[in-house]
Amino acid sequence: GNSVTQMEGPVTLSEEAFLTINCTYTATGYPSLFWYVQYPGEGLQLLLKATKADDKGSNKGFEATYRKETTSFHLEKGSVQVSDSAVYFCALSDSGNTPLVFGKGTRLSVIA
Amino acid sequence: DVKVTQSSRYLVKRTGEKVFLECVQDMDHENMFWYRQDPGLGLRLIYFSYDVKMKEKGDIPEGYSVSREKKERFSLILESASTNQTSMYLCASKKSTGTVETQYFGPGTRLLVL
Image 1 (cartoon, rainbow over the protein chains, first blue to last red):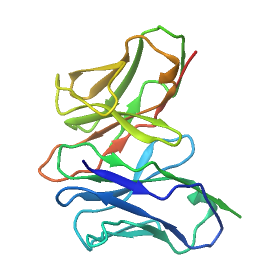
Image 2: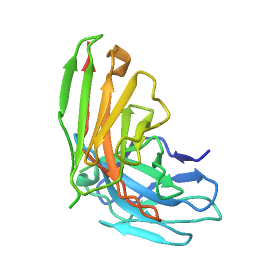
Image 3: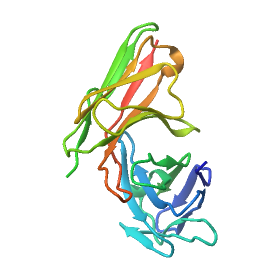
Image 4: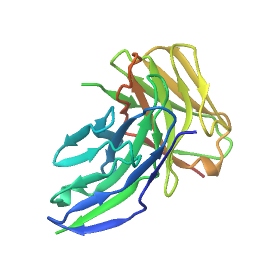
């Protein structure tokens, strides 16, 4: 079955540091890939997505590129801020009606 | 903007009680989902629904049931709450099209079963 593996946290960075959160997936076919973010006390919200190989999703300074050859969708940001402290989830879906399959989440703490 | 609302942000119940968690979405989405979120386990799918009166089991349906009598509302029912059902419960919805659509989440209900 489909699955998502993301790096375990927690990750602690200083403000303005470079962020990478690794995500790899296993899927039959060609899934769409997502990054969701959960800020403290809130539900999940979509951060970015990519629907086909070599697509790059981007939002709020975050980027992730859909790499079919390495089955990866790593999240990056060049300079993190304290306000980026949250839990980040990588997810995939392989067809229109199927639910998202999530990774276990990575908690990011950014300190000033 | 899509809005998914959940009836309670925090809930405290006793073991053995019947618990209803309500979720409403205002964008005419066909698909609705219930997840639970636990530390170290991420999000796990409990049940989902493709349309009114339809339901499908997710990965961990035991101890839960659902109801979808109207398109906008998807209820999660704990028939007899147990302490191991203490968790954060997240509802989500998405449109049903031929392509993969974004799932939108509610704010979550944090349930404590004593």
